[in-house]
Image (cartoon, rainbow, N blue to C red; front, side):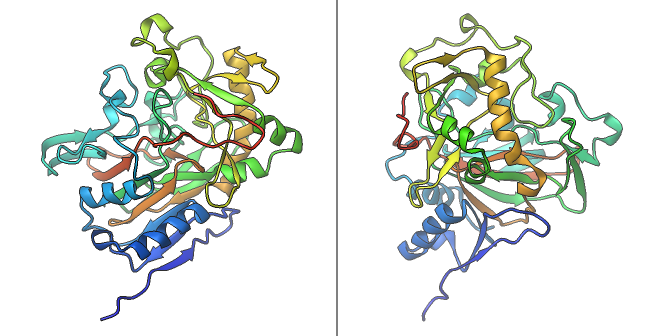
Length: 376
C-alpha cells in the first residue's frame, strides 16, 4: 500500500505582509521516513516556520529524534545546564522530561501527571515580571504584550541551536487578546490566546537601508557571560525588544565564574545554509557590546541597546508578525537561526496550557556574511 505523499502549503495571513511559514501535511513523526525528513528540512529553510498538524501521538523521544536530525552531531539541550541556576530568568519557566532530558515542558496551570512528573505547576511567563511598565491589572486578561523577543540560545559556551520544535499538548481556547506595543507608536495586534509570535530575520534585514545593511553585515555582537543571570534584575522595554538601561545588570563579580573563552562574539547577520539569505539575528536582551569592522568596540550599553533597537524595531511591526493560533497536536519547527520569537499572553489560573520544547546546542557555529568573520 502506497502512503500519501507529504504536502507543503504556504501560510497566508490576511491583511499582513508575513511572507514566511508553511503547513506540512501527511506526516507521522512517530514513523518518519528519510523522504519525509527531506521535505521537512527543505521546507524549514525555505519557509523558516513549519507546522505539522495532528501530531498529538508524538512522543518526547520522537520529538527529540526529529530535532536531532537537523544536526546529527549536536549533543544536549540548547541551554545546557544554565537553566538549573536559581538566579537564571529561565529557571522558573521550564521543567525537564526525566526520560528525555533534551525535551522541556512549558505551559500554565496545575498538571496532575505527565511524562514521569507528578503534581506539578507550570507558570506561563507574564510581562508583569519582566517589563519596566506593566499593563494595568484591569486589562490583564484582555490585553497582552510580547514578553521577550529572543533566539533560543545559551549565548555563552554553546553554539545557538539550529532548530527548535514546539508541541502543543493542551491548549486553552475561546478568546483573543489585544497585544499592545506601548512604545509611543500606538501599534496593536489582535492575537490568539497564548500565541507564539514569530518575525523573520530575513525580512528584518531586507527592509534596512543600504547603510544599515552594510553596518550589520560588518559588525558583531558581544553577549554577556551568563546572560540570563546577568539580566535577572533588569527590566524590559514595553515592546519586549531589549532591556531598559538602568544599570541593573549584575556585575561580573556577582555572576558564576566566567571563562573568557566561552564569551560569544557573533555576527549580526546569520546566513541561511540552504538559500544563502542573510537574517538580522540578535538576542536584544543579552547584548553587551558591538564590534565594528575597523576594530572599534562600542561598549556603552545604553548606546548599544539603542542601536540594536533601532535596527530591529521595524521588523516587529504588526504587519510582519506571524502569531500562531495553536491547536492541540500542532508540532511547530522553526529555523532558530533565521527567526526571532516571543512568548505572548496572559492566562487565568484555571487555563491549563501544556507544551513540549526541544532544541539542541549546535555542533557548529553560525555563519555570518561573507565580509565579517565569526568569533567566539
